[in-house]
Length: 163
Image (cartoon, rainbow, N blue to C red; front, side, top):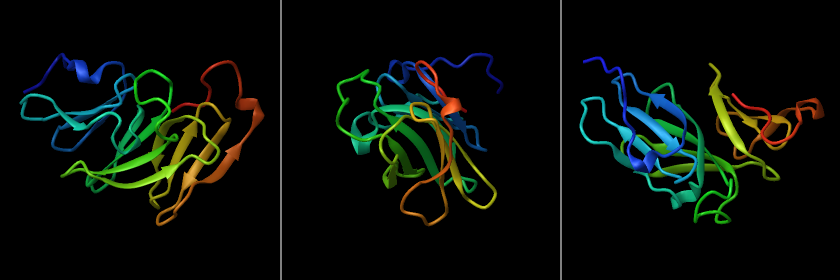
């Protein structure tokens, strides 16, 4: 069944990104609540996949399903928009797609804003930092990000590097 409109629940206020599985499940994060909500493909009610405030989920930005669709990666940052502000550093979170359990976390070195992400064919995950003018790389099996590019020409007022 094709939908011409998807109505998000209140728990998904101010969605920043979506990820869609091959079976049609939709995941969206909330910048204001910190929740990640799953909208099942079969049309049943949306469910909170990750509760805001748990495992450092503060303000959710970019989302990405792993190629095997067994992990959902989520950028979490602290924009000061909810009661969880000040409880966790900005970072990339990895959640098991079946259980919703946190399987890994990588903080952004020196803070910043984890905005969006993409995964290369070799498994490296690249993250844009909207507060520090850089693109970070997380190689497979790595415990921390490396700075791929940092350039002051990518600075300006407010949010910068994205997507």
